[in-house]
Image (cartoon, rainbow, N blue to C red; front, side):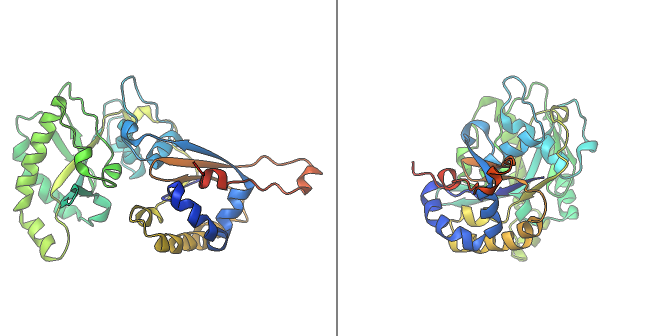
Length: 315
């Protein structure tokens, strides 16, 4: 079994402070860290165009990027598999998904709120799609409803777009990821049309009156074929309990959520074979594999690993 915990690997400076509280806060997790073999992997989100957790999940699902493909191209097939829609898309053609999002101005530029935080109904999304259909004529793009969070997008012939994942974009200034490449111009033009239409749609006004953020933009991602994925992992658990508090740097809340996760999710698994752990942060993840069993009488010796060396490195 593999467990991926998003937000479980703070930056080293704060990790050195948090480590003092971990044994009491998360005894099951600490026991596994002590008994396992940890390996730190530094990632480059600006190059891979996805978060470290997404990078790890693509690896777990056996994604193989094609020549000149960036890693995040595999995220559309991966997401289709995760939401049980992989059978509803062609396996041998590039898959693009448009995530329905909210974009809000901020002091730094603009921030993206992903679909998972919008609570959009199927009826709302189908109304948006129907209203926008006339604007697609002659563009070479077609949209098809997939779920309340995603539309399946067919792109014009020769379309090439290096798209960052919506999750990565939501963690920083959107302007850093909104590419100005000439190849992306047709998509930018289409998104501008959607934003103007969405601004005055009754369904969005209803959301605003209810205190909900309107769906006012689309974020395109993907480009790889579903058949570039390998076999689906049999036992893979992804936990995002810690992600929000890590992004907000609310460390008191982070410790509270870690205690809940340890008590409610990890502790009940303690009687089984130790799982492989992946602790993900903003620019790195650590993989902790169960240590190989020692042959008696060496098994009588303590085998605690100095996991603090990678969880809170000094430099």
